[in-house]
Length: 397
Ligand SMILES: *Cc1c(COP(=O)(O)O)cnc(C)c1O
Picture: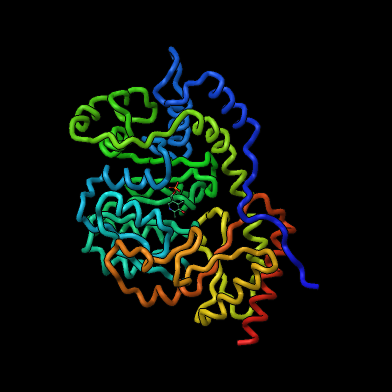
């Protein structure tokens, strides 16, 4: 009898008791809108911003309705206008090119390496094509950020970091999201903190911060923010910055604050699980482990491996066989977008682009979520199942 896994890949942990109590307090007083404050009250949203800014060492922070909204706001705040080109990763998820399309700009895709990070050679080649890079730290893999910043600084490219999968990660000790001009994070259920929907935006640039706050829908109430620039900065931008509502509310902020306090502990738990699976998969014939850089401290909330140069049929067979044994794998090489997964050539609103080196890698990327509801024994079992199915299909081909 072969072993079967019966756990759920989409079940997150319940929220901490402290978060539930904080949410109840907001529900009881009813002031859910962030600017609806009692006399002398700061409000959960403003406090969340203040705390997250301190946590990542940023001057300014803005909480918004989603990660995707934070990214579109970032593009607007740095002055991207319709028709502009924006560099971005070919290996990422739909909200990333979507944020570029949201402002009427055109994504220019940069390739992916076998380490699943942006191809810095390709970036250097394309550096003259755009003034902004929307850098997606896809699935938590950080590229050589020092080298990336050198390339972008030399070319005058503004970097916006999509940290949907790197909240809590660092590069050489620097929190992810703090090397580019702006860092954007998602608080959606499948990311590292969970308020259902939500996003965070950090920057050290006062004008970018002031524009973002007004863009998010602050009306002229920006003085109620606690992680914001001085009022005189708003004076410079307030007449020319549109209000494109996408605020966070106090209920979500209340849920997030205790989770952010627990983040480091959660990261350690994710990594225990990630490392157990990685160990279990090591030295499987035909399977390539994605090695991580020494400079990177990551958050193992998902794991990827490569079935490089396998036929599409063989990869599909591994996915099917693992699925039958309860192990849900996703494949980035699939011709048709499915679930949360799609490929750069399925985004047909973007100009068609050809990245043959990346196509070879994308065709081999297999991806799996690692929710914290898995025990370490679950992780061992999952790795055994993948290992045996990969080996079986590999031998047969
Ligand atoms: C989830 C995600 C986002 C956007 O986050 P939302 O909060 O869902 O809008 C951006 N980039 C990547 C890579 C993501 O996975």
